[in-house]
Length: 280
Image (tube, rainbow, N blue to C red; front, side):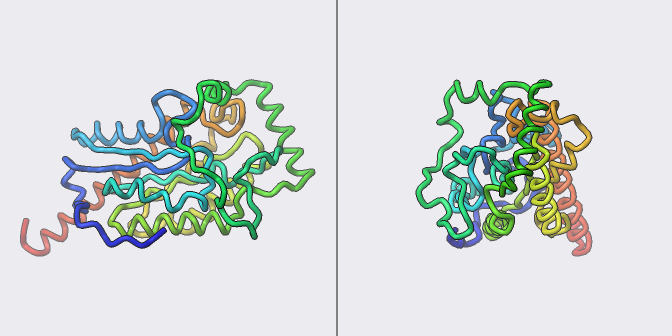
């Protein structure tokens, strides 16, 4: 993505909450798909709005099954909103090890990333597709996930996006957010029903944790740790990829809480600085 000059229209003082702007940029899961309403981004914004007793402005750019390296240039659509915070949700596609190699997104290390793939938004998905992805998990789902995991081990299936490409793409998006004065909120992958793919999700999440857990001006939400205490059948839909309503609500609450804590921290820092200068 091309470098943008810091936007003078972004008010970096979080105490001015009357114009707090939050953007969401990610795959279909950030919108709550395949459910209608109650997505993690909606839950987070609602929580922040209620806690601050102020109206906030939000926008969301939700793409269909996008590996992170393929969509970094589309972050501009979210940054054009001049947000204070940008929630970045990628990894659900990247860390997955698909049994069927039908995905046109799948690329080798030597391929040109995203060269011939049109970028689709979640609005382009049909009701039939949403209905299929919206099937709740059952005992049959658990068996399906174990078979997928076994086949993954036997075939030694590689993830859709190599770890180094995934991390590089996230770093690029984080840097672009910081350059424009926005605080990036990086979400780890959510995990999978398949234990084989889940190992990759944990590895990818750990890499992000190492980069951003203590990084200044970056918020990191470890979704895998958040969901670890719950049975997989309560977290995932039948396909073992899309999230249940409960998981969406849990993650949205964690994202909202993380942003609220950052706002309070920045307000406290501003107050201390003002006191030191004799303003208060």
